[in-house]
Amino acid sequence: MSGLVLEEVLAVLSRTPRVLDVQLRGLPEPWLLANEGEGTWNPRNVLGHLIDGEDHDWIPRARIILGSSNERPFEPFHRFDHLARQVALPDLLDTFAEKRAANLDTLRSWRLGPRELARTGEHPEFGLVTLDQLLATWVTHDLDHLDQVARVMAKRYDEAVGPWKAFLSILKPR
Amino acid sequence: MSGLVLEEVLAVLSRTPRVLDVQLRGLPEPWLLANEGEGTWNPRNVLGHLIDGEDHDWIPRARIILGSSNERPFEPFHRFDHLARQVALPDLLDTFAEKRAANLDTLRSWRLGPRELARTGEHPEFGLVTLDQLLATWVTHDLDHLDQVARVMAKRYDEAVGPWKAFLSILKPR
Image (tube, rainbow over all chains, first blue to last red; front, side):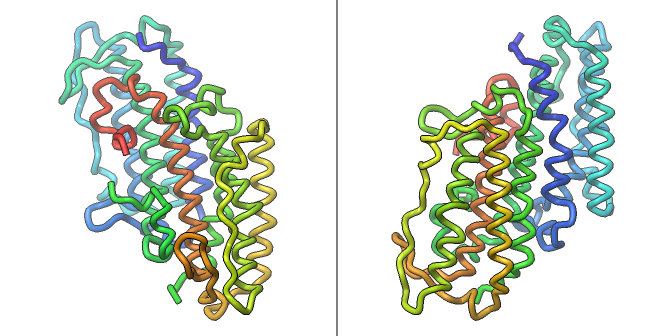
């Protein structure tokens, strides 16, 4: 048991769709197409990826953990499905918000306690993981992609900032 | 002239207060106190710093650039004023939103064209900078701190994510 507080998990997960909505809806197109070079994602791609997570990963994996009496392996994370889709940004934002809300309703309905949070599933690469690790990862994964959206947008002004670049850690190569 | 598009600058700058509002208002306290260790900032500190920027830096520096016939040096950036203040988060969010809105009204009222954007001021550390570099830096500075808020929050779950840490670039040391 990690001491994960479910209310704190829900507080972040429930905010992410609105954060991205406020940040991206109506933004001029060049911001939405900004990326960090070939093979990297723009903010639209990030949204598509988050939607894939709602469909295939977080709640489905939690169901595997909660539903089986024996350990059962997760399916691999669907990381690139979204790149095949061409959907307008407002629709992506709406879809993400709806799917996330429905998934959090499911999560709340389980009324998870320490016993359930300590249950395990089998990750395809690193073996046994607990439900609370999965939920903490869901939160951190959201934050990782919020970070990514800010970073790819900032990259557009990599040259425009001139000598200030030295003070802007977001422009440092990672 | 950098080709900076003022509408694109305004599109980002005008959204930042609401992004932070949606992300932080009502969040459980432990998220608001999260930082990356001693001497680092939590989300409240970031907000205080952004407010200092509205008061002392972006528009005041733009005024120096636009107002003088000769180059005049900027005052140094007020980076740590906010650490002395104890203000509740909702008040910080409101204050930032109000000051930012007023500053963007000022910026719009100047109806800046390429000539004005190419004007210069003197940065205390790296010498001549243009108004468009200042504005691009304002945008990038916002994004840098949105990135920081996500990062310091993620840090709370550095251990809680267990083996998933390997997949979460936001948890990588920088």
